[in-house]
Length: 162
View 1 (cartoon, one colour):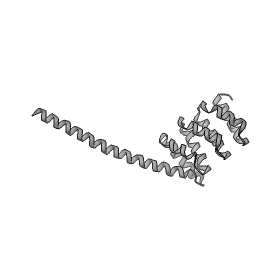
View 2 (cartoon, rainbow, N blue to C red; view 1 turned 30 degrees about the vertical axis):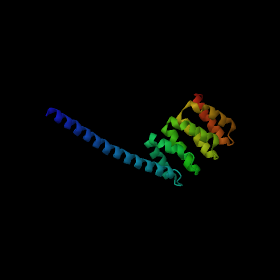
View 3 (tube, helix red, strand yellow; view 1 turned 90 degrees about the horizontal axis):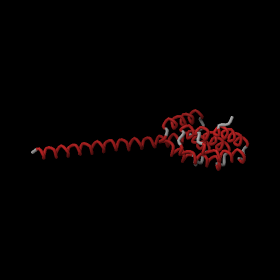
View 4 (tube, rainbow, N blue to C red; view 1 turned 180 degrees about the vertical axis):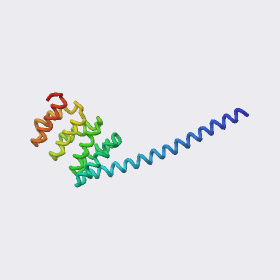
């Protein structure tokens, strides 16, 4: 009799555990879906001509933090240069190391000088010394003089020189 009761108790506990896991898993999955939709909406808002609206999107994405990093990295390839610039700004402020190489890529290859300049500033915010070689190159070779100056200043900050 005891054996039967203890088996029922284990089965009951297992079923309860399974139901809780199923419910929580479904809840987490639906929350993740909502978060992904919100990130996508905010990334599109980064391109808004209304600077306040774009600024609010940057702030919201920075507040989200790490979950926004991968979509923001993808946004660095967006057709709209304003989206790319604002994505770089958000990535710098989030300070996630995954953004280092993509931001260096923008600094080296983006066709818009303003986007390259913002990428240099984002690398300053990121604060990773791994950006130093790219910043040295940009400070000497970028076709835009303002980007060269900003890259030089960021380089000195990362090197710890005034």
